[in-house]
Amino acid sequence: MKKLLHSFLLCFPLVGFCQAVDTAVITRQVDSLIQASRSLTNQQQYGEAMQINDVAEQIAFEKLGIEHAAHGKCLFNHGYIFNSQGKLEDAERFYLDAKTIQENATEVDPLDLAATLNNLGLIYRRQQRYEEAEPLYLKVKEIREEVFTKAHKDYAAIVNNLGALYTYMFRFREAEKNLLEAKELWEYDLKMDSAQYANVLDNLGDVYIKTGRYEEAEPLYLKAKDIREKVLGKFHLDYAGLLNDLANLYSDVARYEEAERYYLQAMEIQIELLGKESYGYALSLNNLGILYKDLGRYEEGERCLLEAKEIWEKTAGTESLEYANCMDNTASLYYKLGLFDAAEPYYQRALAIRKRTNARSVEYSVSLNNLAVLYMAKEEYQAAEPLSKEAKSIFENAGGRENTDYAWSLNNLAILYDKMGLYTDADTLLLSAKRIREKILGNAHPDYANTLEDLAILYQKMKNPEAALKLHLEAKAIFEKTFGKEHPRYEECIRNLAVCIKTGKARTCQPITVGGQ
Image 1 (tube, rainbow, N blue to C red):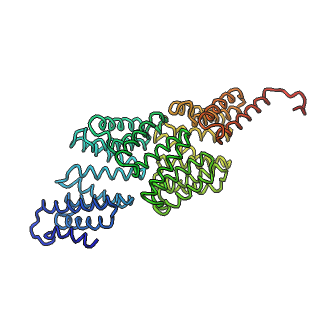
Image 2 (image 1 turned 180 degrees about the horizontal axis):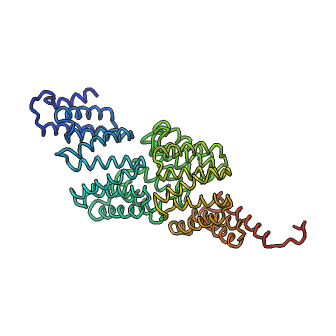
């Protein structure tokens, strides 16, 4: 590295000795150093990149001043190096310093400010600080629209980023509007065989997944997969990411064999490129663990989730959102096995991490809901109710009343009220959840069937066996078509149906004798 750094310094021998400062010359020298540093960063040679950027930063500071635009570019690149290593808090600090200079310096290129705002927004998005990211993205869009025409790839990129952000914020209409605009720009004025266009398709597919429009999502994912394979090749992390998205889709619609195949393909790529201590490999393990849990392959699921947990503990740390997510999923597996005492500390740990990160986030409300469900199973209803109510409130504030997560919170609160004997309240909530799920997911989705079954069980307790039987049969047909007769969820439905038939007969038939059969 000393020889490499020395060769760069030889290019600028007069910087430290000139008495008169030629601002244009110094600025070009700083830019050249930043470009060299950026190239090394993209090659993951972070130490060398940082040393060269330090030289550029020192030159800009000493010769042009702390408030000069060139110094702001150095600070931005310092943040970029940290960002590339996943050191988000360090990156944020330098981006904010660069932003302060770029907003006040007289000769700042507005596109440099836009780059800083965009990257800062990306950090906030990763940290689930969505409300802070949005005004940054909107400012970037304003700058790029003013500098470029809308038919420029950088303008299309920020529209795509906004769409992805609104998806995370559960503002699906705004997300779809922005992503469709970006899609049209690429299709009519830009290159349709580019990785950027594939990214837009991928993000639009995410919107359709979250709104239950699976048939619309699948062709977008498949097209994005073909483009990434053509442009990037099969051994690329973005291609592996698309395989993961497709696997998630197939898992959601119970096409489990296809889901498992894509998860395993993604893992092979991530092992080849990054090894077994990487973020991507841990994410695939996490997703595969969830799939095996849903399939009832609990030992395989636990092994995947615990391995993912160990990787994130080493790489991201025990306060990271990735670690919290894995803790949450592992707890859900233990819950499925009825190991409530094993599940509780995992749920509580995930909840604490997410609360510290963002107590208004959807992810935090998921943790609240999960812990509430656990307390219900333990018959600790007074502990469950405030958690369930808080989760419902967060979901409503985040995405409104017409989204599947809000419906999930209604469903869970209804189950709690059912267990507490508050049948009328439970009925109202379940009917609302049923309406939302039918509207968004359709009447053939397993989540819709879950609500039907919960309603049926409630109606049995309310002594309405005819209505209960009808709902059980409808749920059974959905589970049979979606999962098949060998799936644990179908078997559970059959058991519930049998109880319904038995209790219905007991209430409608009079025994002939006291001891009669």
